[in-house]
Amino acid sequence: MTIRHQGQQYRPRMAFLQKIEALVKDMQNPETGVRMQNQKVLVTSVPHAMTGSDVLQWIAQRLWISNLEAQNLGNFIVKYGYIYPLQDPRNLVLKPDNSLYRFQTPYFWPTQQWPAEDTDYAIYLAKRNIKKKGILEEYEKENYNFLNKKINYKWDFVIMQAKEQYRTGKERNKADRYALDCQEKAYWLVHRCPVSISLPGFTHLMPPPPRTHHPFWRRISRWGCNCVSRMPLLSVGLACERLLVEEERDSLGGMSLGLISWCWG
Image (cartoon, rainbow, N blue to C red; front, side, top):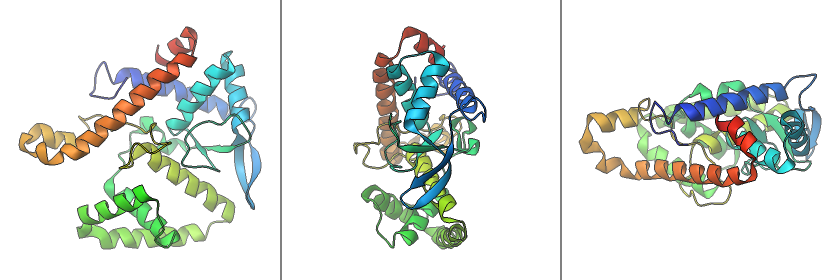
């Protein structure tokens, strides 16, 4: 299922996400949910962390499904941004071991449909550029330079906000700072497709929001002459959609008909 427009193709995905969110809320129940506790990451003690094996075991027991089915469903939960990894933020899969994860705040859940604005992404990249002293990953450098040209007219504002957020972040304790850094990175990996979409670990990103809600699609439908100049952006968006559809289709192979019905019914 891909988000192509409001209507029959859009509602099934939203129904699936709402079921996932109900399950994630159950996972956070302090009495019957996944066990969470302070966990050491390098030399930092991170609160409210959980292991991938605990998440996998909880899903399997809660839904009465096999470990393979629980693994596939767990991967969906991570890929859609409901849980984020603490030790390998770039790898958005549920590892069935002692790898550590945390729950994403509901404010950033996909059903909220907050647009991932260019300005917000530019501030995030500028903040990482300050923190890493200019040493960004290759796709981040490309996006940083692209946004610098695209919204250069307000780049002073971007840098000012990035410096302020960086300063505020340094005032937090080390554990919160580390967890929030992982949270931010996971959010942007889910909602902003890197230019090099063929890199390992990036075939699971969220597709663009419904076209009827996005200013870009409104401009296309209103002024058809702009389509040609915006085709590169269109191609990247469609590529992300196709990759997500193919991965969802392949993942269903490890699920029983009962679980598939629960996910998409």
